[in-house]
Image (tube, rainbow, N blue to C red; front, side):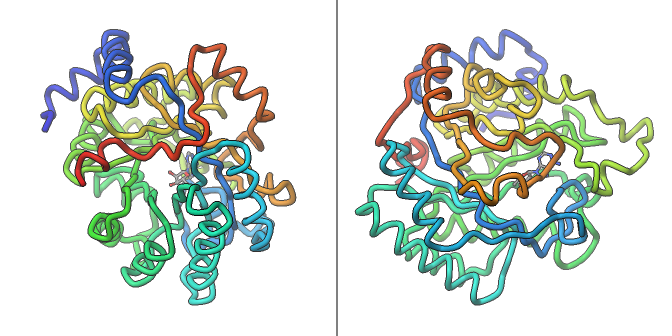
Length: 344
Ligand code: 5AD
């Protein structure tokens, strides 16, 4: 395990860290960008996270739920266009009908794609039994961000109740591991009150639970949330957007140096700050891109933060941009985590 002091050095290492990350990436996971078509299934959510635009208490949100056939249709689009995988994301829901529905969708999508399409779920905290059923139905991977691994900071960005327990979140990450999902987590960067030591702790945490994948993005205010409205103090100063963006690039580069064989996503929140943000993330160590393929009727209502890009530029535009930047787009490849493969 790479130790705290060394991680702090990498986080403070500027361009030298990024240069090292580029080399580590080429030597370990190569130059290819793996695609996951992102389907934002529903913005209905039982949680009330202080930072998130689709939190339960935000009455301004128009709630939607995509029809099953449209989900399968989007998955078919992904499969036919060479996306090796899809990611199904939704607000957190835990009714039996939801569990059953996801299970059915998993079977349908696996069958439709003759088992070729990799499936990632990102559906929040679920019971062990639910996660087991989804795994058996064909889910390959699961993303559950810890948001911040620091318990105290976690408690400042979530309500203090049973529904938002730090311990429960950790427990679910362990459940996912024991069910042999490819496990992904991640954090938001530039939260009020977050410092470099917190970010170094996050990287220690990733090593400890031995993740396969990671998605990290800058925190971006959403006007209708308590965290955006809250007055900052000297201690909870919010870094400027540009600073959050740079911190995220540095975290990506550092993680690539510390855990060379994990999959790292270039996230949408990077693109929200800079039009080329995702390409810049790929340049310093990320290797996964998740273009939004949500059927158009719902696009726009899955608004987690201000100025969230509504849709990936067209398929052709995106690929052209990636190739211009010197990346090779891995078509027809699930792009499973190398780390997961070597653990097995
Ligand atoms: N800024 C940046 N990321 C956010 N997320 C939610 N709200 C925000 C925000 N305001 C991220 C969280 C969550 C993921 C789905 O979106 O990290 O896990």
